[in-house]
Length: 398
Image (cartoon, rainbow, N blue to C red):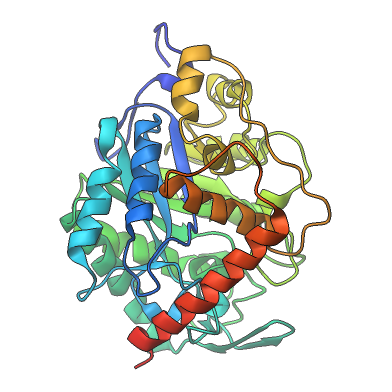
């Protein structure tokens, strides 16, 4: 980490592609649900990423940016394709680059878990389960995916975004291909972990060919999908060992899935960062920079994780929703963290809705220290999604 006065958390990190991150704090990808319902950025979303940049992060990652609107996660997602509002996307890229920060787009495709009200769920294999029904992607559709991801990445680069992250976690499409619970294919994209990771590797190769050698390309990977018989840590370590020979610049380790009824990692009742033990195992499989996302609440937790070499970057999500200027505060005080709200018997998805609505408040410069009522947040979130679904379908239904 070097013999500097600054803690490990505030040392720069040079990625394999040559790009330099000014410190080791990332605003990890969240579905901020701040698109306009037609796939374009809104002014509050622009302001939100400006506030995070001004608050001291090295990089922010916008979650679930779709190249294809027919497999979206939510009607607040962004859609980046030929007919997007390029001026508004450039405005977003500029705002997220304030104060030496970088803004990356997470390239998303929800696959089997595409939002049914606005999408056509399709996954590696056909499924008919309570709360989850989808068709199987044809072989031709699978083979077309790497070029589609690469096209979105190329547009991101052209618009001034500083990097991209390939989303292969949390039960979305590339994660589904990795998991034997979702992927029962009998062609080259199924079977052993070598077959199940084939699409991810092809996507990475296509993106790198499209954006060139000097543009950051990261991947978000589950340590486990936390489902019995699903993607296990042994599989994840095999993927990481293979990624060591790829052109990836950063591996962001997370876990859990949004499979209906499953507990997400972000709603865990455990204490402390979630994935550091797995990150230590991953160290033996790769020399790529590692980042862990999930459970970091205090300066001390983040600093220890970096100082002991478990990870090279710390990914923060909800902590930065509670305090967008947390990195600057940590640099000044070298201690502490935000006060996290406590919820009693929240409904499924309720905590996510609460944090999503707080993101809206931050983007509109009206966030306060008073916790929003959970029931009100859930109602507002659902009402907004219904309104945006109508806008989405009016634009993309054809």
